Amino acid sequence: MIVYQSTKSGFIRDTFDHAIEAIISDAWLKRTGRYAPHAEVQAWQNSLESMAMVLDHPDIEDDVGIGVEFGIPQTAKRMDFLLTGRDESGRDRLVIVELKQWSDAKVSEKDGIIIARRGGRSGEIEGPHPSYQAWSYAALLEGFSEAVYEGNVGLGPCAYLHNFRQKGVLDDPRYAEYLKLAPVFLRGGEEKAKLRAFIRQHVRHGDKGELLYRIENGRIRPSKMLADSLASMLKGNREFVLVDDQKLVFETALELATKAQAGKKRIAIVRGGPGTGKSVVAINLLSALTSRGLNARYVSKNAAPRAVYAARLTGHLQPGRIHNLFSGSGAFTSTEPDTFDCLVVDEAHRLNEGSGRYGNLGEHQVKEVIAASRSTIFFVDDDQVVTFKDVGHSGEIERWAKEFDAEVIHLELASQFRCNGSDGYLAWLDNTLGIRETASTLLDPKEFNLRLFDSPAEMHAEIERLNKVANRARVVAGYCWNWVSKRNPDAWDIEIPEFGYRRQWNLTSDGSLWLVAPTSVKEVGCIHTCQGLELDYVGVIIGPDLAVRDGQLVAVPQGRATSDHSLRGYKTLMSTEPERTRERADRIIRNTYRTLMTRGMKGCFVYCTDPAVRDYLANRIG
Image 1 (cartoon, one colour):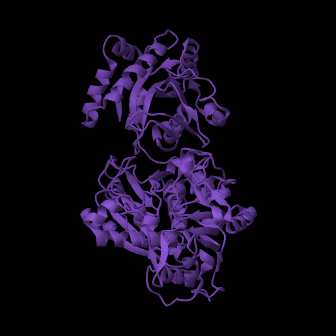
Image 2 (image 1 turned 180 degrees about the horizontal axis):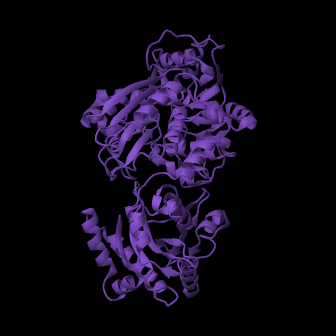
Image 3 (image 1 turned 45 degrees about the vertical axis):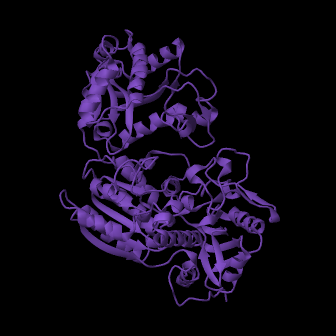
């Protein structure tokens, strides 16, 4: 969807002789059925007038195509400003301009991220650097727009911040890689001339907007180059080899997805516990479906699995084109029905009802995911529901499948490949944490390398030592300490003074790639950045949200940090539904530690802040 289309001469006339923001507002209402927010209208007025002044020059031909607010197919993203035409050789060209009204910003340590006021009520927040944003939009078109990759269209992404004068922030050396891919132009006559020259370099001759029409009405499917790249990354990568029941589930789910037709939805619900290879099968499915020319995405609520698997496939931490095959679970609130051939949903139990920063978008993520695709493969473990908002358990998926009259098949992954392949350890853990009663009341030390530490400092030191082997050891903890370093980078989050132990939570400089970033072993992770992922060795700090009362292990919701969102609304719900709320909180806390203590393939080390909890565990180890 392109809200406004014209030529350069028409755009100049609409801007200077009429009110361009009013024209686009009317078009927005007709296209979407909604009124544009006031802040959006102001942005159109200010930014588009600035662009008109750049283009109002004889160097830019009058019949260059102009597009404003192009909704990128299958995403909720919009490109601010497009110009189309041909270069000197006659090749079709598209210039993508990301427009920002910023006058100030701050450098972030995270890759491709910058801090700025982005509108709304949040003040200064982190988000993509404008160069990264423009480049990523170009990569989306190159990967999925048939009109672009079949037509050999040349793309020229850039960003224009017409109010921004400050040097040394947007062009900080940290952003050098993205500035090469998509240059930034700032306020001032010299910068305006540079932007004009950039546009003329790409779009020498006009096309009357013909390319805009072809892109808007063209097919959306993955390019062969993108499919081949993903297939070659998986080939020979032992981490993603399918074994035993993984192969059967893969082939069955692949057959379901490839035979799905419009009008009759097909759903697979794949149940599997920790370490059964849900994500391995999911990534293989993504590759196989893409190689067959089907429009597929890997979907997860948490960003960490998407970022880590993309990095492990590509071999580097910087985002690339392959990242466009990975999507968050909240991206389908306004997607047209059956837009995708298949959505592969990993960690489906983490799906929420509302989407967006404030949870105010959409109705239900399970419903929206099913609606958006002809077929959906859900990988689920009901015992890894770890917040009040998690609603994607298998029963809920089945309920929505019935609403859509979908064909449903049930598959299971049973073979254990984590925790040294020990089903006994998992059964012991379930019994010990009170998740379900099993016969494994006593753990044989030969089953799995579980070690209890009396000092968190000693445990963390051992993890750091083991991490030197392959960068696959990390410390995680229950969310029992506030994240004070988020606002004060010099502050410590987790402090246990009697052992001289103090550490920060992760998600500082490494973001979702904490699990694989080389220096992040010094930090402590939480459930939100390790769920769905695995390590060789995991160190777990069990905080005051677990205690022993009358010889029984009990959950203590009050032991969670006040900044923990997983139990948000607990006090309010306790006043209206005390018994149900108590049960839900109890299960969430137990599930959290089950999840944390099953991240390690070779070993799990544990420190308990409560000595009674340590003794409780020790008494159950043979």
